[in-house]
Length: 411
Image (tube, rainbow, N blue to C red):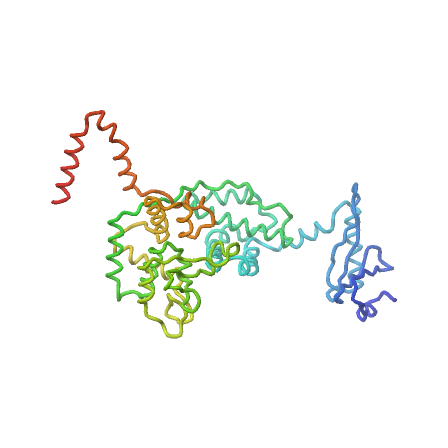
């Protein structure tokens, strides 16, 4: 066979992979795959102890002519003679033009849709636009080092928690650039950057606040979307996540006669599949009393019959409820902690409480949600201190105090 451009273009394949060496240029090979695709490769060996032959793809056959391939091989073999690995140089050259912003854009276009939940992907996009792109976007991805990342992370002292989230997103992006060949393996600059200390959120919900929220919900009846108000109530009653409740459909998820619903997309869906969302009778009654929007399968539809209420839209309604109630800094997610604390106080075991909240591990339930409300702690202190009260002769003083407080409440 003559090794020239015309012959190689018409070369037939027999269903097996083969490498055809160029008789005129040492190290140049044409690789023909089992499917018939063709690509140029260089075969070389670095001058180091125990070095082995390496195969490096130059380009597809259609993109590189024979003469150009020979010229490139001579260039790369020259690098090898100087102790420079062509594969390393190619990665450096490929990454020079790629900035952090370009890496983030590719991450959101290729990785996020297939690997992240829609809400998570949306939050990643917000973090990239607000915190990553403005400060780091123009930096070449190969030049991003740990010192630069640490300086960026520590600069925003007013938003420490948000910067921790931004650091996690940047770390995911950098991991993908290693997979794409834009950075060397194991070079993630976010590794070992110290995170800001985070204090777990503990919000004690008082009964008077719950009463105020209830009055506000009744006052907004007819002034807000009935589905939004109903969703707020159901989220609070069943202890479900907002996204789980909003995802419910009439055609496949509701089993109201049995008192539960099926959640198909949730945090542990990959490991556990569908999960049951237990609905108390009050939540069942709310759903049964909701109007149906024509043409919509959603239990909590938006104005467009084809879509459901978005979390952002429900959050706006919740803010309106909260402001009317005069209750500050109360999140819808806090109702989950409230239900878990009440379950703990009522003697419900932690495994059952975890099932209600949809936790995969009971440690999550214990760590984040089993915090007894302040009023219960106050009652416990009264009980446990009684022996000391008696010993110190303070019983009469305590009785007088309790009597005066009761009179004040009556007034």
